[in-house]
Image (cartoon, rainbow, N blue to C red; front, side):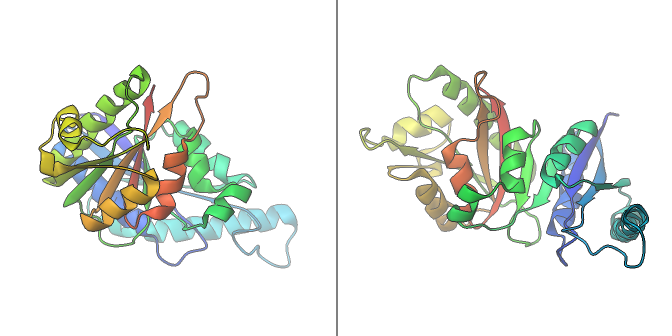
Length: 280
C-alpha cells in the first residue's frame, strides 16, 4: 500500500498548534477514503528571531542546544498521534530564510499536502512584507491547508471558488480540475458542496448557467458582480463553510505568480482555506 506524507509546519512562537490537530484529521481522512497509508511529518524551522538562544555559549553551540530543545518539543507533540497509531517523523532546521526553507523541506519530503497555521495580516502588511503564507501559495507544488480558526477540523459545508473567465481555455481547464477535486473532497467527507464565482462588472450573472457549468443544482451555486474576495467571504459566512477551496493557477510564463484573488481572499474569509496549485 502506498504511503503519503502530510507535512505539518509547527510554529515555535505559538502555544496552540492547530495545524497539528488538522494534520491528524487529514491522516484519518486518507485512511478512511483512500487506499493509502499516510504519515505525519512535523517540521519546525527556527532562527535567532523565532526562539531564544541558550545563554553563555558560543553561537554554534547555542544553535545546536536550541535545536535539541525544539526537537524535544516536537517529540512531545508527536507522542499523542503516535499513541493513536499514526506514524510520525520530526524535523528541526535552523535557517534564517525560514519561509523558503518550508517550501524546500516540503519538496524534499515529497509531501502530498502542507498544513500550516495561518497568521492573520492586514492587506497593508501583505503589501509591504513577504509572508510565509504567500511564499507557500506562490512556490509550493502541492496542496496547502491554511488553518485559521483552530476549531476541530471537520468538513460539513464545503465552498469552492471558481474563476469566471469565459473564453480563456487555461482557466476553463483549471476550473474543471478544482471542481473535480472539490466534489471528491465533499464526497469523502459527506459534505454539502457550494460553488461561488464573481463576474466582471460588464457581465450579467447567470446563476443557472453557472450551475450547469459546475454540474451542480441551482441552489448549490452563488454568482454576482463585484469584488471577488468580498463576495467569496460573504458566501462563506452565509453558508457556514468549514473549508474554502481555491486554486492557484500556474501559467507557463509566470509559474510562481499568485493571483490577486487568492492573495486577498485568505485574509477575508473566516474559515480554513485549501489552496490547490493547478496548471493553466
